[in-house]
Image (tube, rainbow, N blue to C red):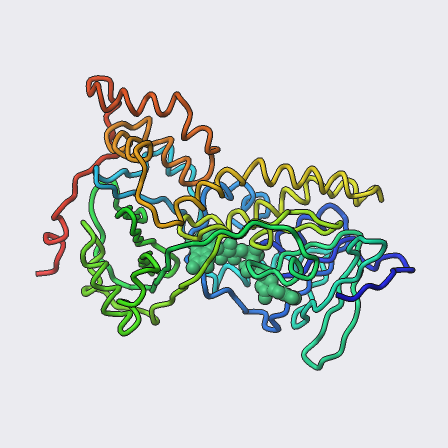
Length: 437
Ligand SMILES: Cc1cc2nc3c(=O)[nH]c(=O)nc-3n(C[C@H](O)[C@H](O)[C@H](O)COP(=O)(O)OP(=O)(O)OC[C@H]3O[C@@H](n4cnc5c(N)ncnc54)[C@H](O)[C@@H]3O)c2cc1C
């Protein structure tokens, strides 16, 4: 880590390292508040994108996506408004109208990343510098005031700002250089996924939604995406990895074939190989440290099984801008604003993250979770709360509140009090009927 005492005033108001979802969202919103922003992205190509992602963006991020003005571009590129039906051993829990209204978006990162980067590059006040890697920190009087960056030709320069933002993802190099305190917990699941065209759809209330199977402890999904593609994923336990290593295609197809009402992969065309991620620990880092802010995966990389990372990357970028932009614009000390951001980040996400970490141990569902799913498969009110929670539009406290748990218990004990779910559908064995003659 280079320690250079800055003697000149910073070149930029904000220096963002990482030009992906979090970094470009923050840069755009800072610049809209009249601030000058440098974004440093090590990928040189304008069409670079993250390959390791199943890109189901939860409904929690929809307001941020709309405020960024990304909705039309996502839909124009073929992205879809998403919703998911949950299979549990108690039946399907399909999203009713209220849950569908809390939709997010699904769109492959091949399309999403360039859209988000174009948005930032086209915003006055943002200087997007691709092909530059941040290699060390500039520190003045103990505070991080900039980064030293290196280009492909090995030339180096320094970029200084009144605020440095680490948006450099799960393996954040900036966090490592700044020794940001964090908490890392193991994730005992792995994932394989691929894309399919021409999958027969399941009729009834679950039609047109994605499907997620809680096989307890395994999980699988089939998620509609842009260009009519279906992303099919399987999440297994790392202790069983040996049985996948020899022939991933055969092993994953065998698991998908076992899914109740599952996708008939043999009737569809696979586009591209199976992609996989075998190790993905949960990492929480303090979102503000020595004057530097962390957003997106740099601050929190939670188990991707729940599809929260893209949405939280955009949302945490917005929280940072909302908390710090006024102080930066007024030339005030930004540290109190960073403390507010840190608290807000924790208030919004920490309980979700801790619950996700607990499930990523590969454990089976606990009695309260089974109670909620059993009730949600029978009662529309509980189903609505479960869907809102899955979309991360309500806090953990709402899911586990005495009101929700009480309603779930009463629903199971007293069927007469159920609000019957038009959302509940028994479609077992319909798959055979879908097979072409
Ligand atoms: C298997 C898997 C599946 C997932 N599925 C989903 C899903 O369905 N839904 C969902 O919401 N999330 C999902 N995620 C999580 C999601 O991919 C991330 O949360 C999201 O990409 C975070 O965005 P980000 O901008 O914070 O970081 P990233 O997208 O990782 O971007 C970081 C950027 O920083 C750049 N960078 C890094 N270091 C430097 C440096 N030193 N100098 C310059 N640039 C640098 C990188 O090139 C990159 O462009 C998944 C993740 C995994 C692993």
